[in-house]
Image (cartoon, one colour):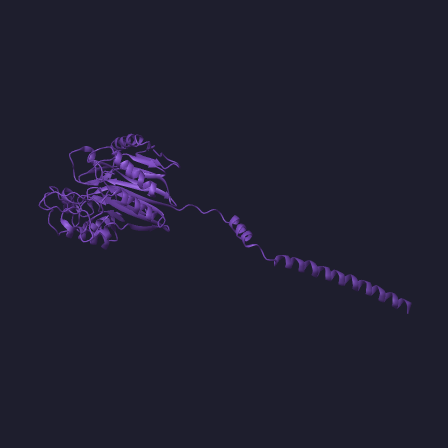
Length: 388
């Protein structure tokens, strides 16, 4: 009997120990589960997730820009002899290397219309050239210049229709004032890029018996007039709705290597209002480029597709490729080009060196650093550029 009682006590003792161990295990496991299910502060959770993710890499994209594309006169003859794509054969790989390609179309594409009286120089290209422009890589073309209405309204309207059929957006002209001032907005990598185009030659006429200017009106086709105040307002209105604004201006003094002071003032005002690019055309030769407040101004990009002119410098030009990260212009690569037999071609080393050294000097006079290496120029857009 005594031995049985002793055994019972031992069993009871071990039973209590086992129960305590089980309860302890349940307690610790339960506490861990409870802690894991406690509500986590949302901000802390987002910060932890953000810390685990690598920083976003800036999206890089590019835009190629060139000077005047004139497809009439001697160029039209060359195209009829060598094919519609002849003017672009040499430079198409460069034109198509960017996400966006922009230029100034200096001649209508049409078989309609009559020469506007008194003008003296009338330019017109074959409508089939629109397909060649598309094949070459153009996305947007300014029509705001002093030749797009050489054959009056029918030729202008034809040009716009032929370009749109090819998926090319014309800018700076329209069937009326409302359309002429409408910006073109393109999208790259989710960023919206707006193009505006205007010309200072819009209010000129050539015959008092036919005082028809090129300026668009509410009831008349034409181009957008270069009115600095209106353009500044247009840029400021766009600033909050798009990511980058490019303004094309047909302006300046023909055959001059230098922009006028008033041009620099207008360009700076446009940048102050929100433009990141100001692209100039009309002088038929290159002028300097300027970095101003992290924006790039090219006062004249010269000719690009053109027939032979008397001044040798009119056959010297460039193609400029602008590299953009997110919405900040990082740099501009400048490729020297020679126009030979109505066809732009990459410049050989001696010609390229001459073109680039001249452009370097013109840029330095605008307080912009232009470096030359291996037959290519480079402008780096530096934070806090010249504000002068």
